[in-house]
Image (tube, rainbow, N blue to C red):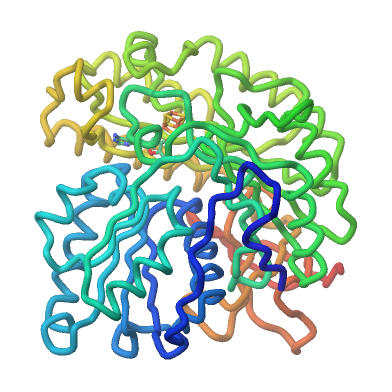
Length: 463
Ligand code: 5AD
Ligand code: SF4
């Protein structure tokens, strides 16, 4: 595996701490990951860094000398989950001096305050400072010293580190980090810092290696992939180059921002068979006043125009994110969002209650004045609507066949396979005579459907 952590003469490289001379090979680390795919990806980077420094990764906290929580800060319930897990580790800390580290967005967001409030934490490291983690962990393990690294960087992209992945079919590949959009509700620009794009050569080298290792699908990740810029490369060019890597079966990306969706990206989607015909296009609200308060830089009408332009290119599945109960959202304004969901008929929608976040523009300028019970009720009504739409779309596939990339055994049964369609709908079907393995492309005949899953039987093995 490639682990060239420092590239000489690269001004992007941060120094990596020297491995300890005291043989930390005996130290074992267990990592728990919360939150989004970018965090999953960061955990893979952290695993690589730690192994390079002689740490041993283990699968449960009982065996570990150190436990790391890679955290999310996007909503308050993400924080609460982490507090719950920290409390869980208290007995292990007291019994045998377990070292506890908090990584990621919550560490970056709360910094010293979190260290002070939670004496259980030995090490606190933000998303741009993972190269300092091995040194801080060794310090905590060997001398009981607490340590913190929460510097944000304008350059850090970890692009010389090949993350250690565990899923054998899909690999996440971050193409950029940070966000400069400052949507008023969102904490990400404060926890992940300024936007910076990875060198396309390093992205492509990583994708080539993934294919050599047997990966069949890559998902390109960025907080707003439309902002990707590196010399004269934009995201459409990068996506086309990745899609042309021989041996790759599917390419996905997440997420583009509706304010600057380039037509060239649709050309790449339409012109490259390996790029899945699926776009996650977060709308957040269907009301112009709320969109403006959110700082989203598009209107309901311009979003709908974009949806129409996408749909004119053929069957492309759309999914979205929606926030209910943003500051001052009235019933009529919520009704606009409800109607937008009815009009667009997304394949899938992630629907959230607004959660006020420290530092954000909304927290500084607006009142979080929609009662909790109203937020809950608005989310529930939208979820019900979306479930009915998803069910209708999925039931329309009964009697037809869909192409599925086999990912592994179904969660609920060892006797079934699970995979996704190009539109990213989950498909489950009975295992057959043993001719199918994860990574295969198969055709499944659909017999039944729920709002979230298609059920069927193997029609044919394709590749
Ligand atoms: N409250 C609720 N949802 C939020 N999101 C981002 N910030 C907040 C917040 N403060 C949602 C948005 C975004 C998704 C990743 O999380 O819908 O697209
Ligand atoms: Fe947050 Fe907006 Fe950036 Fe997405 S685009 S990460 S919602 S600030």
